[in-house]
Length: 176
Length: 337
Image 1 (tube, helix red, strand yellow):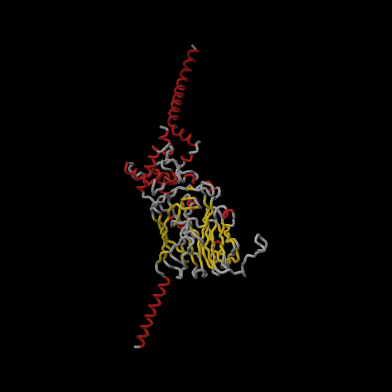
Image 2 (tube, chains in turn red, purple):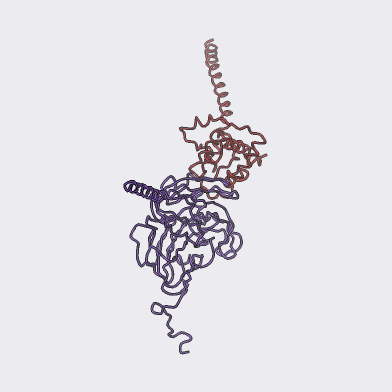
């Protein structure tokens, strides 16, 4: 009888323990799922392209810049115009390459190398506003500021074209 | 009556003097005359303070770097070095820069004669087919380098984007018989020195500071500089680099006067054999040519001259002056004949 009581007490104590364990296990599984992107980040962090994760926008402006709204719809006409700027007066192709892989004719002159737009994680972490800001203001690593050379409409068009290069230009396309 | 006439004459004289003064102090607008090396625009006979406009266009042009060696130069005014610009201290300069529609790159200009942001570079980042402009007052007399200052700047300079601007002092420079424009640059090709055909730029050789060519006036008017015996010659000598400091020397001559580092207004050096000209620097050298000869301009880091091309010729003609120089026949193969 005493043994029965002891067993019952043990069962009563073990039930909540089991429940807590199950819940924790479920949370961990969920967390793993949520951290899928982090795993991608971690892989990138240890790769030569780790620099792609770091924004070039000053921290004091980041929130404002990320909230910028793209003013140009990404359609056939605007993409065609942006492509002409990318390969023409914007001179983007010289450094970033025709397909946006950061392998243009002048790429080897720069250290760090020009941005490869076809890195999927870079496309994922960079907002349109950040890309627009960099086109406008340039970077310390050699990207010239286009604030006075291109209109806002042209720059937003380029942002859309850079997104297209991310879809079709290189790595993503090659893996298919 | 006499008083009225006197007053009238006084009024008219005052009017004439005022007009004359205003004409001097606010000289008429002018477009700067630009010349291709080795030519130099004529000295400015007017006072400083003129409103001067400079029109310059950048371009990317195929040219000849050495015999049988083609190279795509990046240029100001389709030539390397870019045109010689001549203004006077106190001038108000409006600088208009165009970039040819056929250029593949953005270009700009940083003039070392300019006091202001980037020497004009920030205001003149010009896309292909575009135009930019800025204003500057020429404050300091001297001979100054200008160059492109668009990223990657060493690449733009190594491809030939540089030239000279002279800011004459208020009273001008002393009169000479001949003025010439010479500009040194170091070049970096994928192929070895002398390898024929179209050669691409080699950024790694540039970073290693191992040029395949060192040239004076790489894509300018061909031919020798010329002078007559007894004339005084002034050379404006610039160095674009991007890497090498020039040991500029003229074989068979001594520089009577050198404005070292282009420092017009400082006491010039006298009796100089070789003068140093750093990348982004310039000097003015002057000498009287006393005897006829083919005087050879060199960078006296001599392998650059003999092996890589840093050579030019000043051809001086006229009667021999044996009191100063004559060859003597002693010994040798034809002695006794």
